[in-house]
Image (cartoon, rainbow over all chains, first blue to last red; front, side):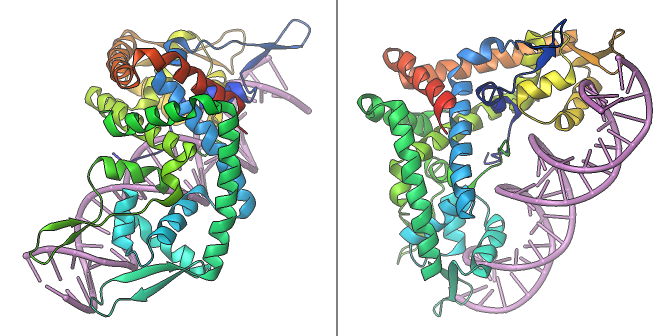
Length: 177
Length: 177
DNA sequence: TATTGTTATACTCTATAACTATA
DNA sequence: TATAGTTATAGAGTATAACAATA
């Protein structure tokens, strides 16, 4: 699949969360909540998983934007940092994306001085990617933001349930079909 | 926010799940797994939430495609079915999307005979949306697919933990910031 | 003036296919 | 022939702004 594109579905609870529900004017012009019936959606795991992920992603996206980066750049920078010298093809595979999707991303990171590319002598088709000092600083900032974000999640989940919650998430990712 | 657009991040575990990890050839040409280090990503709730959601969405997307629809259409059809006569603006708000985003979606559903639009006499700017018989049949198919999908998730989560797992997801969607 | 829905336009992330330069 | 990376192009879902019709 991999076409991880926004789906209308996910926004329903977000809308509710943000108090954006459709409204109607009453007889005296006051706002009257038009209650939307979400039907079976509201009770399904798949739907609620989507809602939680969307809300979490929005929150992290907000933190990232304050640093001037996107969540996607965070993933790419982390992978390069943890796998110094990784090639673009390896990176795209680790990412589950086609290599052509990575070209503009790497180009952007190099242009902004976060990543450096070196030709490999033994195979002159390949590049090795590494973070520059600037890239490392940016990644450190984003990592701190991510940790604050994680502490928020920990607070909501509660320490007692966290391990089991994480286990279930990992099992779902590994076993669903 | 609302720009729920795919992020490279999410695919990492998906790639692992699908055995798509980068590989290298050994001395005798055999495939040698190049192990990618995911660093701190692997232990974070936000990341694992994303992985689980992505895997789950892909699975449901696959089921939907077999019916000839997209997950997004399922959400839209469900909302119309549960709120007969809903207007396009109300629908877009329930969806958390701009009304202009809904125009091509409704147009497509009307063109394919799943939804009918009626002008409202008391306010001739507004349309009322309803499912046609065909729309109801399609929604019934998709709902059955969703229930099979839910049973899969239930099996993975386990009945004992399901309620608590759902509660945590709902709390995250409601409280994260 | 405000609202409903449409149009025009643009953005992000993604994919496929064809290309180049190497191997 | 096969692989690494680029280019050209397209598609899905989204947004903003301006508009016509109606309120």
